[in-house]
Length: 131
Image 1 (spheres, helix red, strand yellow):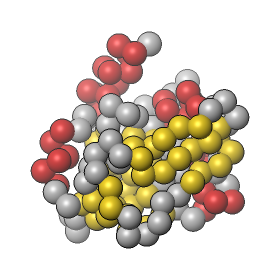
Image 2: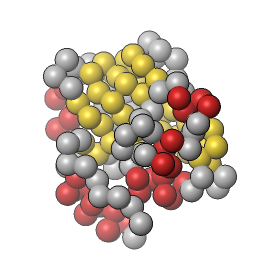
Image 3: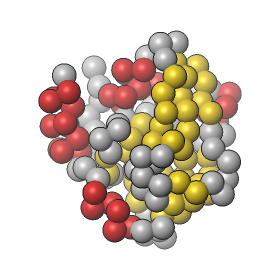
């Protein structure tokens, strides 16, 4: 059963979450619902620091026992940090999708893009419609 989606972040229709910080950076990961659909994650292909991304562009790739899935950037920005812990323990995403299982940190190009993302309540509604 998926954990509740924290209300302190934004959500994408592609099942990513984003926490925005006042310094113009954001932490990005996949939702608990997404990791549940993927099942056991065995590998994460992290991007290079400095890589530029745009909305809906692949920012990382997650491999599970079931499939290989692209992780999309919800916003335009530059990768400033990656979660190195995922290289040795990719299952952190399964264990703590909303915390220790974060994937990348970006410096946003345009914080206005956050307005295009979903609230926790909107995301919950979207998942109900998908099921």
